[in-house]
Image (cartoon, rainbow, N blue to C red):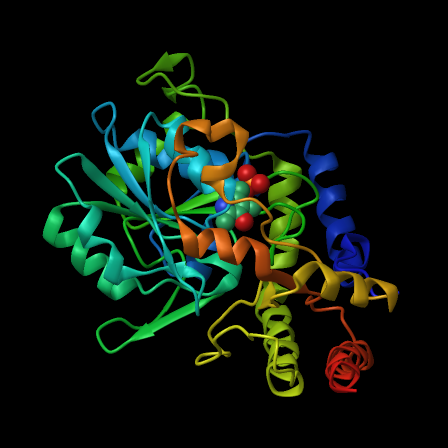
Length: 372
Ligand SMILES: *Cc1c(COP(=O)(O)O)cnc(C)c1O
């Protein structure tokens, strides 16, 4: 059996460092917003090459808090890809904004900059590019448009820890340092995952960072003094300590993900399968390896019968969710089609070469069968 993802196995190489971190927090007697959080914030800001990192309770809060901090008028609009993860859309509506869905480029699965300008109105205030599956959106054209229309840009970097964007003007830059701010999740299955919920915001904006530090803690700048109507979205010391223990291995783990992704990219040869675009395999964080198959469910069963676990990211597009019945009338054919054809293969740093060989052979064997 090759499971799609085994979280226990994923944390196995980190166990000694994690145990030390937990001991340290226990010995300190300090549990929320303390030295461990400050240390991790400093380390993660340095990793992303940003001026600030603000630890929060989870990824959804990270995105929501930034949109709230910008204080847009009610019913302002935020642009997001139609195939985004539900949390990206939730952050927009939680902040009192209206999501405007733009179809992705079906090759990259990412917000298509060429389709953005057509939906910009006087109510548009922000663009939320989601670096889905670990690949950075086309940030230079997105930022250029945003500048022209005076829009804020918030990266949803929850799947892109360590991903790189490069262009002539930007050089090589890490996700999280590509817009006005970025929201991060450290949910256990992410490339950098805690032992529970955790999140962060990175930004180079000093005033925004200061406001976010208050907003995550009841809107308080000094104890019992409240500047804003904030919320409780504090990062705890244990999760911060665990993240600090795991961060030094992130680049090595991402390198392994890239190695495995490249094996899939060259090894899988099947006329029915569309592989993800791989023009920059050494830049992507490869949070997920998502292929497309026209008979996705049959294909998934075929793999399951041969002991290979897969997952679907995601089976229902946001505008077809019950929770968002108000958007059910929208026609977003690219997102709707992707949701029927995408399937994620196992990809994580603990996957062995032999396992990947078996997965590739099993997939290619299906082609031979189909020919007979
Ligand atoms: C995981 C994820 C989130 C939300 O993170 P949580 O910590 O689960 O709240 C947001 N956006 C994307 C793209 C994600 O993958």
